[in-house]
Structure formats: C-alpha cells, structure tokens
Image 1 (tube, rainbow, N blue to C red):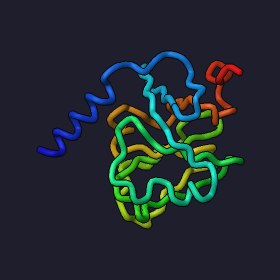
Image 2 (tube, rainbow, N blue to C red; image 1 turned 90 degrees about the vertical axis):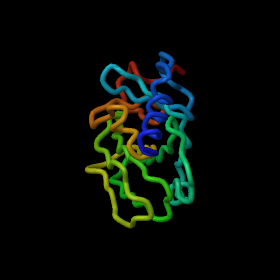
Image 3 (cartoon, one colour; image 1 turned 135 degrees about the horizontal axis):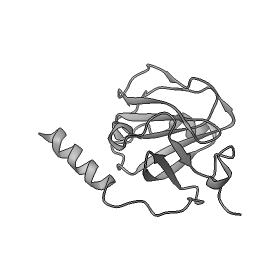
Length: 159
C-alpha cells in the first residue's frame, strides 16, 4: 500500500507540468530529453574530490525532481558504490556529448557493490531509485547542462 502511494506521489510530482522550454544555462538545473518529454532536475554539483567522495551519503531523502551531478574533467571511466547511502538511487552515466551511456537502476543502500561506466564519461547523475524507469529515461537520452561541451551545438548555452 505504502509503495503504491509513494509511486503515485512521485508520478504526480514529476508529471505536474511540462518543464519550461529552452536550454538550462544555470548549472543548478539539468534537463533530460527522453522521447518526446523533457524532464528538469535541480542538481547539486559534485566536481571536486571531497564532494565526490561524500556524494549523497547519509541523506535520508531526495525529492523526486532533484539529484547530484558528479562532473569529471577529463572524462574518465567511473566506479560508484552505495556505502553509507541511506536511500536507493539510480545512477545515469553520461558521456561528453551529454548522452546517457548506461544506467544502474535502484542501487541497494549501504552496499559496497560497484557500478561502473562502460567507458569514459563526463558525468554521473544520481537521482532517486526508480526515477529513470518511471520517466522512461533510457541509454541514449540527451542530457542538457553546461557541463556537456560535446553536446550538439543547438543544446549549448548562449554566452
């Protein structure tokens, strides 16, 4: 019962309205283009080793439209685990062009099992467990954010 209520709440929150059109140039916002849908997330940026090591550890909740974006410069093969992470997460591995390379879905809490990118990635987006499937986000989806310099020109922020 609780799972059904939670799923209904998450779906209502995520589908409450379409994300505003346009490319997000604010680094605290990120859009994912999945099929005909655009999903906007508020993101915290983890771009230094200390932030990346802590990630979302010890958090007890994560709103459905938020996440943490781990940015790697230069792009590299990455390895993530869930040690000290109290909430299940989806991990979206994103290449330099902003394409979702692969997804590790609903990772177990407090686990030392490693999830790795298949190749070099520019970033990893962590969102609540099950969000990727709920929104229909699959490998190949386009992520729009200033971190992805290799993205198609139409998806770059205006200077």
